[in-house]
Length: 240
Image 1: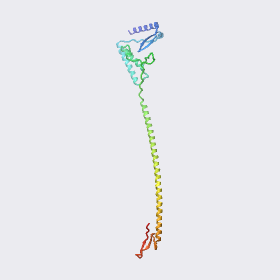
Image 2 (image 1 turned 45 degrees about the horizontal axis):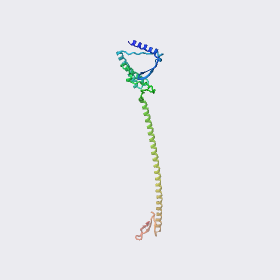
Image 3 (image 1 turned 60 degrees about the horizontal axis):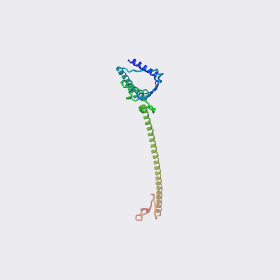
């Protein structure tokens, strides 16, 4: 039966090739296309597919579903270079045909269909999501960021330490200058006090020396005889 149907369509194709003399516009895969049988003169390599019975359809459906599952795994794995929109559409069309639907465009859009007026795709593919980043690349990026943060932290610590050292040196220098000023002032005051003390001592010695009858003893003080106690002496005391 299938071979007879294949022969009929082969003869029909040959007749159209031989006698077709004008171009026609037909709807093919949800798009209007121009078909000119005169361009078929050299089309000799052709395959005619004939639908099978119920048992054959079940087997075909299972086979196409197996292909669809393989395509699904490839898409999930990011192998879009092996399976694209066109291949997925072909699988969907084949499943629709096996299920007995004559117009698969009722269920699926042809990704290659073009608007004849604008020349643009009727159903352009949306932007595909970016593949997940490589974990090794993420680890390298994280390490690089951590290294950058560590370098920045060390630089900040060094800068703060340098600032603290500069402040310490400045305070130390100011303290030393202030201490030197205080010491100089104390030294000057001590010198003045020593000068006054020395002058007072010399003045006291001069006064003592002026007391009539006073004599200087070994202890450095001056003494005069005590008129009330013969043989006793009184120490000359000078009050400033």
